[in-house]
Each structure stands twice: as structure tokens, then as C-alpha cells.
Image 1 (tube, rainbow, N blue to C red):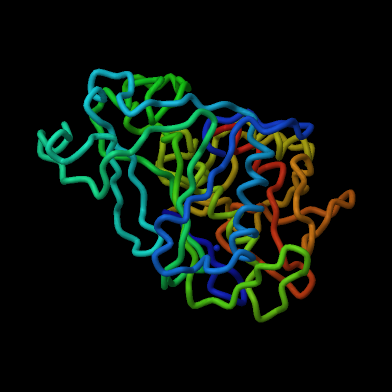
Image 2: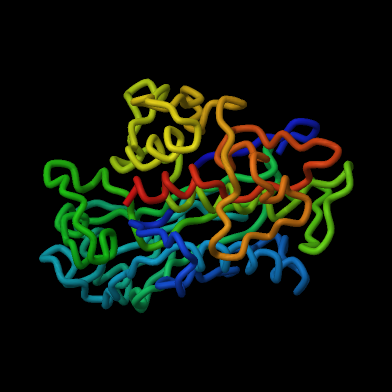
Length: 328
């Protein structure tokens, strides 16, 4: 779970991804699920419309495909049921949803696992990536994390199963540590004064929801996560993903071999890098630095959203998108 903070306010791809350089039609659909919005944070259509705009932005950028997975799965450990797991957006607790019909037929309960929160999950639809959203009181404006699930090792190993969904990460000795590719969850602080309007810049005393949501979905998709695919050193101080490194070197004429991270807080080092906004996929440029040549934005996945009097919104940058390629 990662959080974003912002200067002035205390505030803050998936999968395996090929990312289009010229804005091709999307290959996956980021599906927003409000089932665990138990505090009714998204209590108006306007709020949901803005959340959908964030999901649609990522859907337009990500061009890989995700395999469907039936309730039975394909691996030897999944025949009687597998699970998805995530952080409850409304409480911060853990949620486990099983494809088994009940705890009586849940093979994981049979080997000592806790009973799942829900049973009868119908499986995963091809090219859909699920994002559970909601709100609760928390110290940061937003928090987001990748999904997982308590499962047999055979489920984690199964390339066509719920964790990989058709992608082979070539890490046979540590498949349990691979980035899960079925979904994630994000939550927003219920105590903020949020600005949900996509067509106007946030006033100084409000937090731009679009910016924070874009950042947290990035975490849910695997950026700044603890999985094998986030290519950081053990101290989380240096990043070695080649696509992001190449993006930085290409834009500044450099030759670095690593990029700097925020240490135990696995974001890009605050204030160290800037990059152009990633223009394919129809970014929302209201309140941003725009796309004029030579005017670059702080990276979206920095730990602090450094809003100013004129900069009221953050978007995906070329380097953030290059890191999405790295995780997949």
C-alpha cells in the first residue's frame, strides 16, 4: 500500500504492459468496482464520472491483453477454488474472495487458511482489470496497492491462472513474488476538501481528485510495489528498469544506468526528475503544465504532489509510462 502527500495539503501499469506510443485502441478495460465503498465516498455521479475518467485514461494507454480465468482455473491447486485478495477501501482491512462455493468446499480452508470473506466468485473476464475503490479516514489523501490473494503455489505458478493471466515473467523460482495481474484497490481520505471537476483547475484550498487518483492507480498497477517486477535494489534507493532509464537518458542526453528512488518510500526521488506529459491516450491537461516544448512536469509517481498557485493537476509523464513497460 502506497500513499501520496502533497505540499500544502497532506495528500499523495498493470499489468504487464505494452504501452502505445501513438495512442492505439485500448486492449484492456480498467473496471471500477464500488462494492467496498462502504463509507459512500463516491456518493454522487459526478464523483464516479471523475473516477471513471481516471480509469479510462489508463485503459487508453495500456495495450496488452489479459486472459480470462474460469472459477476452476487451470492449475492443480485451483481445481476446487482460488482467491483474489485486496485491501478493503472502506476499512483498510484485508478482503479475500474465493471461487469456491462455500468454506466447506474451499481447499485453502482445508489446509489451515482463514475462511474467505466471500464465496462464489465467478472468475475473471478477458481483458478486464478490476479496481476496487472507496474512502476512509486516513492521514494521506490517497492510498493504493496491488491485489493478490491467498492461494496454493500452483496457482501463483499457473501462467494461465488468476495471477499471471497469460504472462510469463520468467521467474520460476519466485512466482509468488510476481506482480498479480487481476486488479488492485485504492482509497481516498474522507476528511479532505476534494475538487472533482475535470474541466476546471482546483482552487488553492481544494485537492485535485484526478491527480491523486492517477497516482494511486499507478501504485495499484505495480509502480512502487514490492513485487519482482518493480526493479529496485534491496534498499529501494536505485531503480534499474531499462525503459524508464532510456526515457530519461533520451530526453536529457544522459547516460545514467540507474534512477534514484525515495528509499523506504518507493517512489521516484522527490524533485529529482521532470518529464513531458505523455500525450497519447488523451491526457486531461486542465491545470497541468501543458505540453509546450521544454515545459516538463514532476513525475506523477513522486511521493509529494508539489502543487503551486498555477500548477493544479498532475498527469502521467513519459517516464511514468516507461516504468509501466518495465513492470511488464
